[in-house]
Image (cartoon, rainbow, N blue to C red):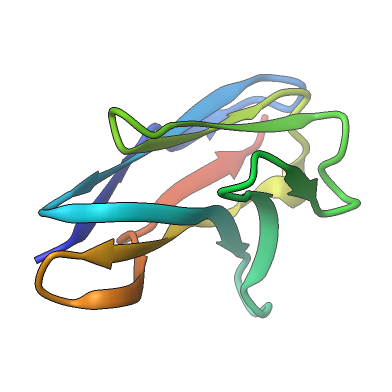
Length: 120
């Protein structure tokens, strides 16, 4: 069974940095797009960053220049480096990965979420 496990959230002061990590486990044949989403209280879940299987990256306008997504296909990991954090970045952050699993075929898997709180 393909699963994602996230880590790295926490409390940080405005202007600070955090690095989120997300690792995939299970028998995986291929990994496609790897994404980070976030959901703030009372708001819809939004796409923050995407790293496509073709090697391109996309960011929400609100995080461009501050966040960087990276991936390691061998380790089956995706990361989100968040710099110059603002209170409005406070949210639960989720990774989502599109894979071909040995048993499941193509599917999109979500992590459990990790809370990021930006506050002084």
